[in-house]
Image (cartoon, rainbow, N blue to C red):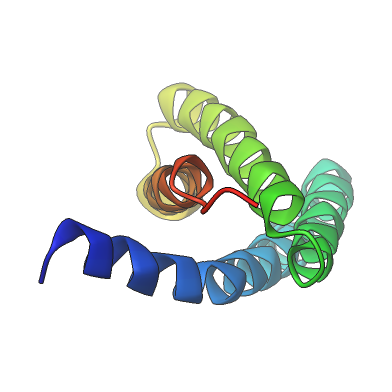
Length: 118
């Protein structure tokens, strides 16, 4: 598989990556509230999930904006989860979400940089 074929496949997957990541982030916030009674996790998880859902929605009309918002959110959440992992030294959930956010951020940023010019 050539790089161009890989990027085309990744671009086709981008809306699904954004949508699944949005759901995981939002559900993670709810789980954080249920398990640890963390209102901060609930509010930030749902707010981040909502912004990512908006990115998915915007992608349908303007892929550049949707992927851009998704990339920024994934990179911002990467920072949040890395700081939490450093503080807690606990793989769940901070370590896992750090890895997931890094992979999503890398994938979406790669898509954004390789979007065809209009």
